[in-house]
Length: 119
Image 1 (cartoon, rainbow, N blue to C red):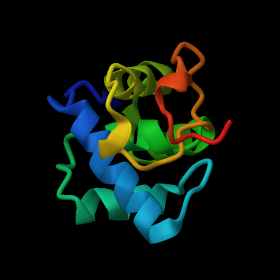
Image 2: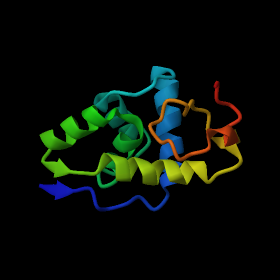
Image 3: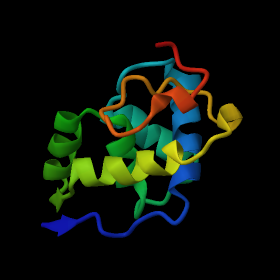
Image 4: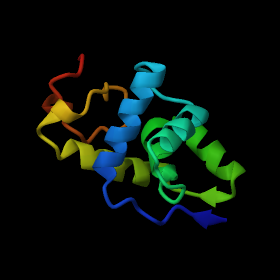
């Protein structure tokens, strides 16, 4: 099995592009299906080398693991999700990102910086 070791250089932009595409095409959801994330990656031109990182940000842990197992990859959901969401949490100006992040399994982020979230 191979691992998802190639990291996207602009994780924040990838989360923004794919997240906004998912909301636009499927509405706000707690999680998105593997197929929905695949289609969003394709529409946004996310390279297959970096597509796994979108799955970490927007799929459930079990869907992420099942998908990666089916394609013969071993990827660390928690580590990858942490990296993807850390890129978003460091941003103070949230006007560029219109997606509800309240569902994300990432307890170390202070979501109060996201003034558009409904808590």
